[in-house]
Amino acid sequence: MKTRLLLLVLISGILLHCKPNETAKKQTIQTISSTNTITIPSLIINGKNTHDIVKAYRIAIGDVSGNIQYHKSGVLEQKEPCLYAGLIYGKPWTRDAAINVWNGFGLLSPEVSKNTLLAQLEKSENGETTIIGQYWDKIIWTIGAWNYYLYSGDTEFLLDIYKVTQNTLNQLEENEFSEEFGLFRGPAVYGDGVAAYPKIYTRSQDKSKNGSYSGIYQWPEENKDLKFPKGFGIPMHALSTNAVYYQVYSLMSKIETELNKEPNKSWKTKAEKLKKAINKNFWNEKKNNYNYLVDPFGNSDAQESMGISFSLLFDITEKNNIDKIFKNTKIEPAGIPCVYPTFKRFRNEKLDSYGRHSGTVWPHIQGFWADAAMKNNKPEIFLHEFNALTRHALRDFQFVEIYHPTKETAYGGIQEPHLKEWTTWFCAERQSWSATAYLSMIFKNIIGMDFSEKGITFSPFLPKEINDVEFLGLKYRNSIIDIHISGSGNKIEQFSVNGKKSDDFFLSKDLEGKITVEITLTES
Image (tube, rainbow, N blue to C red):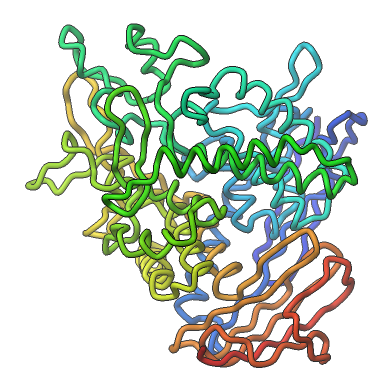
């Protein structure tokens, strides 16, 4: 096969087409895109394309673009451009793929996004295609795939999404659903390291063994007397993971509607039951916030920020508890910590140390928390995360994987030790989901685009120091959109499309060609 080069030209508003040399045979699931395109809209703030936010945006675009590599895995039949998890990670990863597509990469490059999603599927001997990756949160793939559909309108792939999700849910319901709690067993979303969990999930309780292991997936093999007898064997139930299952159940009904299928009432029933179980088992009346884990070892009432953010974003949280969450969630100078507090075994005051997956600040979680804040009209909470991530990107000239919560420096944290040697782990550079978290804050919260099956609804927010934003050359389905926002605040005073005033602040998915959106804001 001839060597093919993926050329990424970072010129605002220009489309670059890279055509494969060979055409694959038609499959049940389409595995090859006819073109691979990335669009890079220009951002201009207060008349400057060198404003600090614009520079951070351009850094994010650079980090993401540089992580597009030719790759073959899953159902891809040959190497195709995919988005890798980061500079030092040599593959997309399932949860990373989903989160990156969801947080705006799917808008910039639908073709590469589709390849990246396909790379996380496998076809079994019985002909069924399912999601691959670490089992407990791999169903998050469906949320990423659904957002790919919202950005692209790819109905043909939507049918594949439906079948793949159905097959994977059947597998996970059989192996990991707890009838006792009405919840799914398994670790937290992205929490693959044991630093994310209480001491019982390390090897430390076995005094005859030296050191520990870093991956939570190793726990059942090392603790056979404690493992759950069914499925993979990890007996915990995590807030974030169950929130993702709830959202996937909810999306299945929407997917059926889009495919003109007769609605299967069981999806709604399962979603409602799971939502009820989440609030029953995780809500903590004493601390007015959610707990982290439900397990046989005493549970954990730590703050799991990903799960809390998802519960707010997916409308799992009871309305009377929303303000309580924002009042009682701990925020650090660098942003919201992934898990708070860090587990005691990692905290050393002299070294100012934190666990890799507890106490530290991970930008992809910052992005979800910021979005949850804006969804609930908490702009000051949003700005803390947005300003911190802007500050860090400008200092480091990149978006790294993890930050120290108080020093705000790049920091890999402490993972469970091997041979009883405690060392600080690496902090990955140019991490894709850190960059897409920032892009998401701009797309969804500053420009205020909310994508649905019908189109885009706008609800921008410009802080006081910003009075003019231009976002030029955004490719959305069959249109190219230029957006101009003036004023400050989050109340739309005037909204027009191609010079025609509108009161619904909405762009239909069916619009074609060049579209100009003009929005005037005022303080609410």
